[in-house]
Length: 215
Image (tube, rainbow, N blue to C red; front, side, top):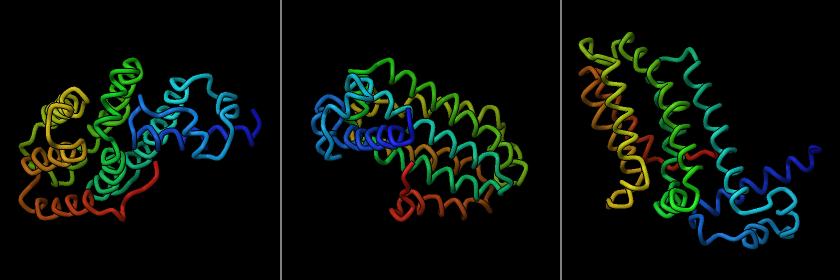
């Protein structure tokens, strides 16, 4: 595949993901995606034989970008608060765009892909936060008596238990509300008294549209 084809393929994946996130999976057609890009449906089929293939490619593209961003943040030499601010910007931007329809459709019409996403976020995104939590304790941002292993398990279990289509579809709050609430509830109990003041900055970051970025 030459560079022109690679660029075209990536452009289709990006446009498709925007459609899927906005309207869900079931209602979106390849005709609509082709029309958005002002290309022929034949061009879409050149790279993706079916909507399912395009959905998988688009989701995998986003997953790879997120993993690279998270790896860069975790591996940096910045203090915990700076890392957490950047991480909240990355994950928060993604979460606020996850409509209930997209999540429900994904689990209903592409259950294997949903399992991949669930595994990805657990093993390749949130698992890397264990190292950051230890850094927070070393920097005295987290309380000295906090058991990091236990805190991490509670955090991971809460994320897995709440941030899924089955749970969210039965609630009035959005994925963004859930994500924000989990961080606020858990972290306020873990932070030292001095660090709680700075934690308010995380609220502002999650609510500020200027931090929206393309991932």
